[in-house]
Length: 222
Image (cartoon, rainbow, N blue to C red; front, side, top):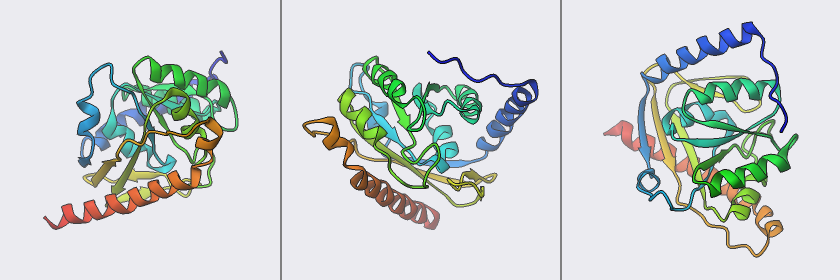
């Protein structure tokens, strides 16, 4: 197993302060969640799921989810920073990405799913393009015989970074609307056929974004 990158003292302090700020900020958000109850009601032996979420929406989605879940994270230094922050939310990192350590991370992700925890993947991470659906989540779901569940958010007031993913930070007291999609089990005969369905699942994610925006609009009018 590859040892994680070292983090200097200044960065560790920044992570601690940043985590405190995130908790203080998140406590003000007004979060509405749709479609999650089926996951919460699962029996312990029920199938675990592969959650797919866009990289730029990680912050509000992981804040709202906060269940013991493995998260596929890059092995680079910035990935180590993210890994340490999400641990305070109750997640654990599975290190690797499409550009580095991907095969090992997928194998570890399969074991996580088979041993009773969900896995979360950003199909457009770690480097984009934004809202592009890479095949990693499909390969993982097929090999673990686990359904895929999309996880998307709409934030009415936010800061948006000028990064490749348009990273979203909800402003204080923002309304955050979240939707868990219906589980989709891959019945493809082999992993290559499953991995070829990236356009279909990318479209599903885009449709989910439009749907959650509509839900947010309905909520704002009531």
